Length: 151
Length: 171
Image (tube, rainbow over all chains, first blue to last red; front, side, top):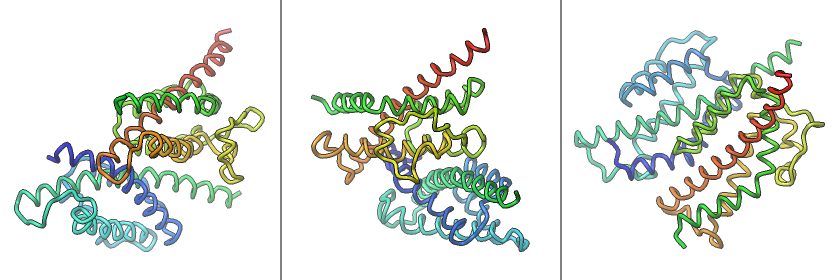
């Protein structure tokens, strides 16, 4: 269980770092990589797992979705999970200690591994919440564009 | 004077300054949501009053904007009476009358209230730095207090405006 001090840092991070990065992440995929916003079924699945699971389970889910044999029409979903996996890997392996200062010196004890899992679950949950909120706006924007073109 | 008291005074002071903007957004909310979607306003207020993160409020606004067309409804220019604070910030692109209610509210919280938070926390006033964890916590709190105050004023105006709609129906 994170300490009160760690929770304060997490809330600060969520407002100042994760929120902005989640917006940039999904906008980059949609505007620069020309991916479609994440479909509703994936949004529901990702939200459910980020609300209910440990980080290890969320990580397994993301890798499973990344490695699935997606049809050509849904290759954007694969791109999304590939990028999300990379982002969380960097967060867990580097930023958690070096940038966020949430974990002390490099240790690999059972307690530290569990602490990292708990912190990552909270960080990932907030990142996903921010990402999905922005994704909803992008989905409406794309649907409006399609409707205008169809007129 | 204790820091906590100074924060409360500064936030109250700002609340006087953004009252006109809150009224404008309350009118926009009443036009877009009508009385029948009152629960949207109570939901927004509840989130703002209970959360510890401003990003939860912004995410809520985004979710509702994506979900419900009435959150995306513009405010007709002839009904709009933009206040000085909003006007002074706007460029053609960010003209509030071009925006739906949710987008306009989000923009106001993300830009105008952040500027006000930065001014309150500057060296000349509360002197709350963003270089330490403690400072960042205090800044987060000041921003949330500003958001809560603004939304309370906005929802009060919304209630006032839709009460006319209720009266018309009752007549």
